[in-house]
Length: 513
Image 1 (cartoon, rainbow, N blue to C red):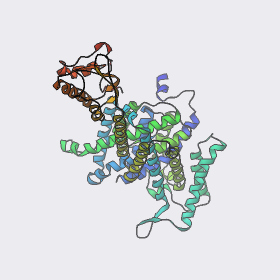
Image 2 (cartoon, rainbow, N blue to C red; image 1 turned 90 degrees about the vertical axis):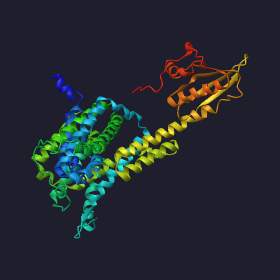
Image 3 (cartoon, rainbow, N blue to C red; image 1 turned 90 degrees about the horizontal axis):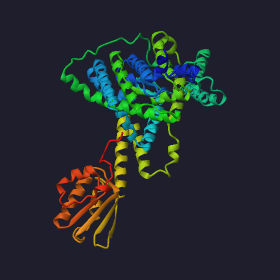
Image 4 (cartoon, rainbow, N blue to C red; image 1 turned 180 degrees about the vertical axis):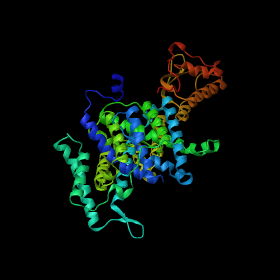
């Protein structure tokens, strides 16, 4: 029994009331998001809601980050929309299952730790871009369909009522925590706006105006896709991109929640949980998904810290679908819009704007570029990948300029080169320029005690340098060179005199993750 409770992180420190109320708030916020993302993907609203339930429940129980919320997301919807339009939902379900298998494999191979390679500037850009996307997505609520079937901005009384309700929601969410934190402010705001609309019979947009959420328990369904190489070749690219997008967004969200809660999640465990959730989502008629930063922030800001809130959110969502659809469809969209706008404001890293003058220009460039790619293309994985690549190139360029050589000639006429800085593909050219092979004396010593040969380019540079001295009939000694480098340089062993006693024990390009 104790193992059961430990699985759900139930302990005396868990505030059950906060966890339950936070979960209810998240469940209400999940509904319009799941419906909207399903429609973006060209699928039925229930497909998104079923995905939110399955993803939320599985990751809440088995995920690597208590308090983090998963569900149907826009990033996944953008990936699968083309396949949905061309081949229909059956291929989507198969793609989701295959993406889940890829994510589980990533977790087993412990690739979750690679998220450590994402620089802070990229995380800032990712978060800011996602905040802007969340905010911009709420602007559609201020539009209506005209007689020609076009989506246009609302005007007149209906617009003023909507703005008033949205601002009231935002005011409650902002002000209530200053008075009391006994009840999550977002839940209070939703209930107050709902009460105002019902009591005064205000005519405003509701959840039911978007789509019906009435349904049953997610039906088990094996995708009706021919099990052939042609089918696998068709869905694999979508599945691979979906798996990558889902893991990147989930692991970045995990890191952000880690910073907020000052705790540490488990990235590889989250990869396996996300994969398992996607597999079950595909078999239970869901569109798949990943972690949701907005809903996770709602959950954490409401005080939730354990797995119970995520479980309550998923179960409550299913209850709404099966038994409470008529009531939930009456919820004013103004309340949920105000809630998501406040989430966007809370998600944006305002502190990043104050660091523009203090951060290196390259970091500022990366942060702005990642934000722009996220907002313009709505492709979070591509934005992060672009940011990481640019950051890596900037790092390589900066380190390439760091290599130095101190030169001296001792009393016996032997010339010494003391190398400082890493020797790798970026610094090879500068390294070669340090040596005057033609004018150097008959004996030369290169000391690597303050340098490291990082990659094969560096090893090849040393190898070619020894050959240059050999052609001139001069003897070259390499000191403090690692043993694995000496093995790779065995073809030049006739002219290399390595001081083994002073050799360090480091390895070349060893994976320390």
